[in-house]
Structure formats: structure tokens, C-alpha cells
Length: 425
Image 1 (cartoon, rainbow, N blue to C red):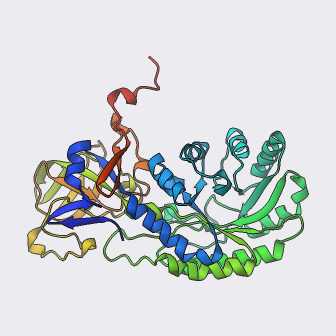
Image 2: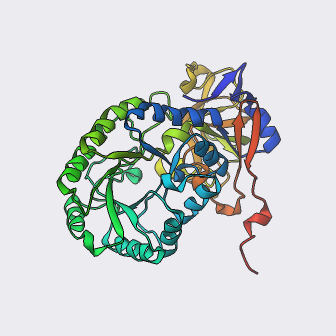
Image 3: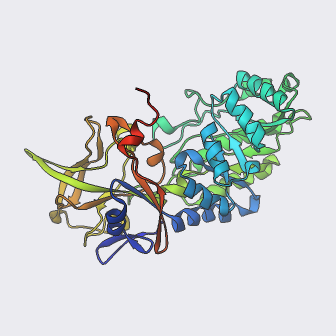
């Protein structure tokens, strides 16, 4: 699953103890394993090899340049949703010819930048967006390749806020509306309608939702392909789920390939994939230092130096992240541990932010801990640092990329000065 393991009671990332990383780089600290990152990319590459897909890592999951460079070096393309993400991909040496650009609100500047870069596909989802892209293509003096994003009205995903494929969301086009737009392809003379995009959500643990979504998508492609709309690309999105806790039953890449590849082949399309969480989720942890043990009547709180500004997922999505001391002779459940309940104490793991919603874990059975102990928050590689903020004027955490016995500082910890660097007095 990943390259984090307890050895002689000490959590290690590849060949380095987490305690050594925290001592050197401080806390809160995001720690990433290069081996895990590339292993999970490799699993998708192998599972989908028969389709020869363009695998476009979803940059929004984690946009650190060191990770993007590692993925680009391993042959990954990229899925971007902003001009800033495209800028990062270019800085990391990514191939623009393997970039797809999604998002419902692309600006004129962003469209011009993507046209200049020469990206593979613009995933578009409204007539006004097509009008804006037509204007950008005309300014650039060349054609833009478009994949219309259709909404198959399939509910999927680990939370309502990350379910994107049903008609109640802002994403995509109803198939009949998309078909009507393709019939008017001549209205956008500098656009080539060469694909269809569908993305139904995130943290999808089983392949069944893709069956319904892609069956409707393939039917759409076959029924609407024409000389003016060749629809030669099928972008099936991403959303493959990962293990956050021991009882999660996330299907592997091969299970998703079994349902996606035949449908792309049936449609006669080249395949694009947009995995993000699957590649980077289990490749990262967040390390925090226990500041105080607070007993309040019958309840115990472990107050740590990482808060919702560092990892907002528990507060935003009620998301579960396994939390465990980084030095313990008891293994956490996801690592095969079955601690006797008598050795554990139920507690909330909370941060320093001035919000009741500032917590990393609620009501968890944990080993006894004391101030100064190091705490690990697992499966924090996706949507961890990427969604962090300076709320409460807190400097954002440092990030470290581990390769074997080597740790590279991938992002310096912010200082107080960096908090006000863009402000004027």
C-alpha cells in the first residue's frame, strides 16, 4: 500500500525515521514517499497498458513541484484546473502535449496561456466557455481541441461535496444539450470537437459506478460522432479511491481497468485518465507534535500543533484519517495492529485553531501519549497541503520528499514575514 512502516516501534518513511525528519525540519510537516508515489502511478500504467492511455495526474490533489517533477520523469501527463496549475506543470518539465484542462470557470488569460502552451485537450462544459475558447483560439491563430464534459447523472464518491456526476451539481452538460452543441460545431470554427469528458466524483471504492456512467457516455459518442465532431478521445476522469482506514475496501487499478478499457475500445476512442488521490493519497503523511493533554471531565483532548489550516479534510468532509503516535510498540489498525482496548484511551485529536471544527480525529481509541510526543496523520498526501491555508495567520507547513535514505526539503516552512509579503501598509 505504501512505504511507511513501523520498525522497532518507530514509524519510518522508506529508510528514514519520522522522528528524525521532525527533528530536522520541524512540525507540522508533510512527508512524502517517492517510492509510493511512483509505485501507484506504475500500478495504473500497468493496469491500463492495453489501452495505451494518456495518464494525466490530477494536479489539484497535490501540486508540489518536486512531486510533479518525479511524475513527469515517470511519463505522467497532467490534469489541470487553473492557470497556476499549468504554470506549475511547465516549471516541473511536464509535457504540455499530455495536459488536459478542466474547470467550469476558465478566464481569458488562462485560455490564452493554455493555447500558447499547446495542451492536448480543453474539457469544456458550457456554450459561453466555447465562445471564450473560440476567441482564444482565434487570437492564437490555431485550432483548439475540445472534449465536451457530459453529466451522466450518476451519483458516486465518498462525500456529497466530491460527487460531481449527477445533475444537481454545477459540472458537465446534459447529454441532449451536448448533442445539440455538437450539431452547431460550425459556430466555433477554430474548435475541433474531438472528445468527450466524464468525471463522476472522487474516492470511489468500487468500479460499478463507472459502468453506468461510461455506458451512457459510449452511447453518446456513438450517436453523435460526425465529420465535424470526430470524438476520438474519451476522458474517463479519475476518482479511484484509496485506503484511509483498515476496513476500507478500495478496488485496485486492475478492477477499474476491467470496466473502463473495454468501453473506451467499444467507442473507438483513445483513453485519457485523471487519477490524483490514487497516486498521491497514501504517499504522504502529516507529522504533528503533541502540545498538551487536556482532560475535561470525562473527555480527553490531545492538542497538537497541526490544525484545520494544515489539514481541513476532517472538518470540511468529515473525512477519516488514521492518527497514531509515530513511536509506539502498538501498531495502528491499518498496519495490521489489533491493540487490546484496555491499553487505549478514547480522545479527540484537536489543533490550535480558534474554531470548534478544528480537529484531526474525534473519539479515537489511541495509546496513551504525553506532551512532546510525535503524532502521524496517515493518507495525507492528497488534498492535504493543497487545501491548506494561513487561517489564524499561521505559517503553512514544510514539505519533505523522501527517496530511500535521502530527504529533500520540497517546500520551506513559511515565516511570519511570508504571511505579509503580499500586503501593503
